Image (cartoon, rainbow, N blue to C red; front, top):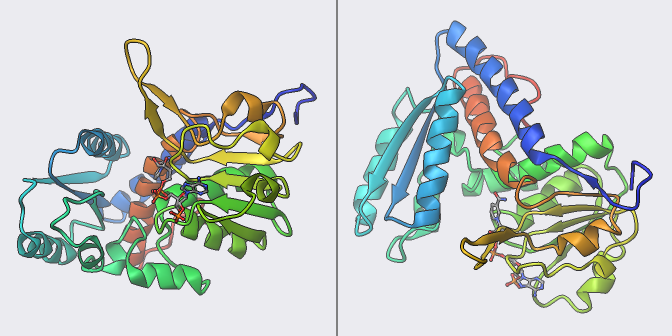
Length: 300
Ligand code: NDP
């Protein structure tokens, strides 16, 4: 509606992510000129098909940005001791500046233990308890990629988020909670909603910004949205379609776009930002590890 039409402005995450990747490529070029090549190590345990797609995409995009990419594919029955030994080795490897363990892990592995064994300076997913604490106390942290991507889109749209009412639906450690922390840091008034929230539509109707990170296809309807609000749809839900599967968000796009001021589509909204932010975090980690000036415009 920002353009005077009766539909929301579409927030083009794909185009924004492409611009962010260009900045990453420029920063990689500068770091290489200073004698270091940022390197990302990705560990995939097992053969989850969605994880395999993500890992391939991360590898390709690293190489395109001029970075090193190290893939470690381990069998599903890998022992915790072997996985922890690999992480210890990568923690000490000077060519590796970012370490990512693809989640979910097989059930016999303790995800918290595994994530917390990563050197926090190389924890480019921002899930290590130290980074969670740093973010929560307003200190310089590695910021989880998906919430970081959402924030960069929001800042691009609004410049100053101060004083805005933000409702985050979902309280997971990887999206909802860090998203809420980031919005709080931007001086929004933040509400975190979850499965026990009473009268969720009434809560979201108060919001200038709604971030949906629920994992329920098209749950958030147009009549949950305040006219003119900004809607960020983190959801990725695969629905069986005719012939091939259909990808939808946690927001019912058509009804929400008729009311919102701006909205991210699925696909093409938040999704492409996540890997771009992963590359950005790896470059930032590399600069910090080598005490080099931190490249500008890559993080929040
Ligand atoms: P989780 O399942 O970990 O968390 C979902 C959250 O939604 C929980 O806090 C849960 O509440 C809440 N919830 C569930 N049902 C309802 C309901 N009916 N009403 C209100 N709240 C509800 O999911 P994630 O945070 O990992 O992911 C959320 C979505 O984002 C998924 O669709 C996922 O695929 C997508 N995603 C997308 C990424 C991207 O790159 N774009 C990256 C990561 C995730 P409670 O805590 O009470 O159970």
